[in-house]
Length: 510
Picture 1: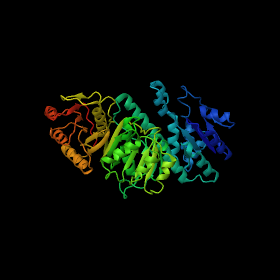
Picture 2: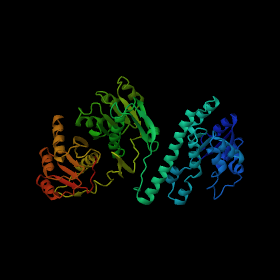
Picture 3: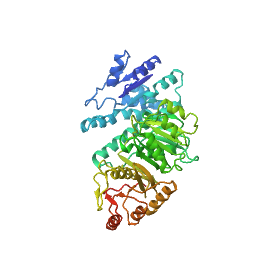
Picture 4: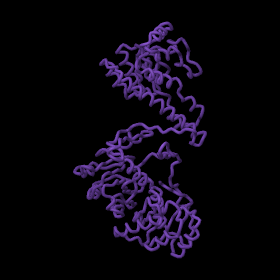
């Protein structure tokens, strides 16, 4: 029995090789893998010695040889194949263990294109695909986390077709992901990220109980390793809808750097947000915006959850709580709440990966774009187009309102007062309707909007939204500008004594 071992990631390879030798396998190996095996006293045959063909072109060609690929690919149940293998002295390579050159790690470390090119594996994918194609006879192993399980199966005489089939699927996934990454990188480097083809590749983190609804299957995947390494469940099982709501809540709460903010989300939209002196005060202020919608919602806390905050949150039913950390004493407070789910992510503060591109599924395909975000100085550099200028305190409120509005479903308006959201209208077909709905909700909550500020993620097409805002005492407004009726809007703001700022950037979120 012959096993071919040639891995870039050397984790666990020595123990795996020892286990294979103990089972009677002879080892073929190359380069760094061969070196580490020999250093650990494992007898292995160098591929070039076996093929009688030296490595060429600085290692670009070493395993691309009929004795390697013939040993993997020949059909054991075809007499002609078996006879041909014997005729040319081709070993029966029944196990292939290969993982690929670190292309991902290379592009993260360097822009040196020559070095990047040399870290595109050729022989590795060829061996993996060959072994996977011939899985009826060959066991392919591409993941070091499978070494122990594979050895246990081999020791038990359970090199089954089902095992080889499972490993075959993982192998094709391994090479597909590798090729997707290379193709996307080349398109990014030479075509601005929008080539003839674009590939979306994710790794399964876990199935969810179901999708958006119980009759739909669901699961969640990650591009890199954020959810498997930096996102942990402390209580409860996460659902499909939890994940999308958490995405909205954490994106908002992590948009304000190290500030102790709290965001409450229901069905993908914020129903509460505040930045106060600490996370306890922020939560209390955020809840005031709409404590009815907050019931059964998602709370993202940009700071550690202690006992006081836990006791406050525990007064109502919150389905999901996410924070960078929670004390053990605070966690115990939620023991009696069976349905609450608690997760931690980040370090001292909430953090999320910031993907460079964003896509949405449409029937038959998807639309792709650069990811949107509010730039650091977008509010600071906004142009005051009114006679009246905002105060420092109003500018702080405007920044909060504007950043939150950029992450609320369009059409939307966001009202902020004293660093807390006091009203929000979202997902409306008319911007003035969004303004009216927000005002009506604030009145139901008993909130005084006098002196608050208003942000819109897109321009006001008419002055009616400004007029509605003035009725409830809005003092300053920020919006992108760009309407053919901007002058009417500006004139209205001046008549009402309101400060008005244009940023020049629209932030639709559909």
